[in-house]
Length: 79
Image 1 (cartoon, rainbow, N blue to C red):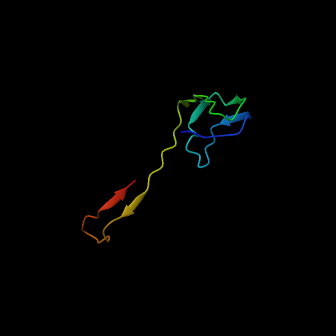
Image 2: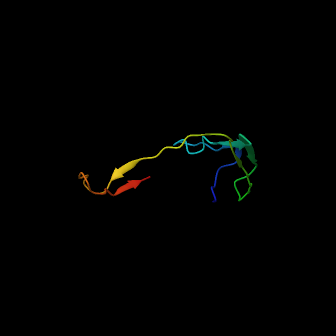
Image 3: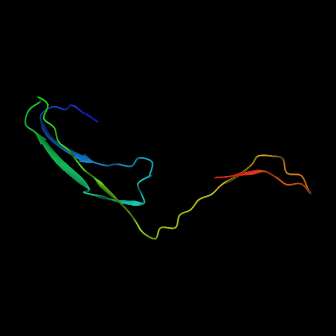
């Protein structure tokens, strides 16, 4: 992805708005980049996501697909 910015110092950080990264540790937490000019200076930033061990947070849901009737099987959707 290319993002064109003005010259100056910029701090980059990964932010999880919907908590999808709560099971990971991010290295480095942030990084700083300095662009001396506006004429196509490029920087590469690499973030590492390491999974956090021993998290037990399983969530499941059940939705009936057919109407429940006594003596008959019912089809459900497990997600």
